[in-house]
Image (cartoon, rainbow, N blue to C red; front, side, top):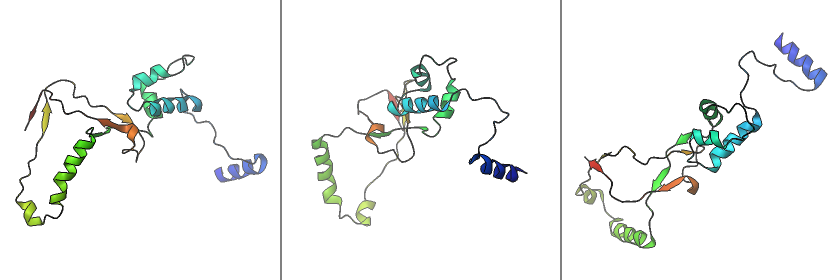
Length: 157
């Protein structure tokens, strides 16, 4: 019966569309969904609450944070790639360290002691940020956070 109805609709109207469902009506339309995604991509480190505040003021009622989370689900929130802000001098020093060891064999590397360390922060804020990005955008410079090497309170075990 469903196939016959779809075929009849295709013959008479030239298109097939889905009937309205019986569920709860959507709180946002397609234009507002695009605006939500635009705010999340323009400022990748923004939170759900700040996205909620950046929506047009004419929007009444304001969508909840859960609605916004569902609209930006394709982006996902992930930890940014963290790297040291290296100067040209730092890069040259690293290169000078690595060149003599490029030809080391397995026996040479066995004489090196590697340690496994874990750092535990003693302060409440560990300065971790999250960014809204799509899969495969990890190396994009917009999503990289440079970290400093200043000493903070913590214990290394």
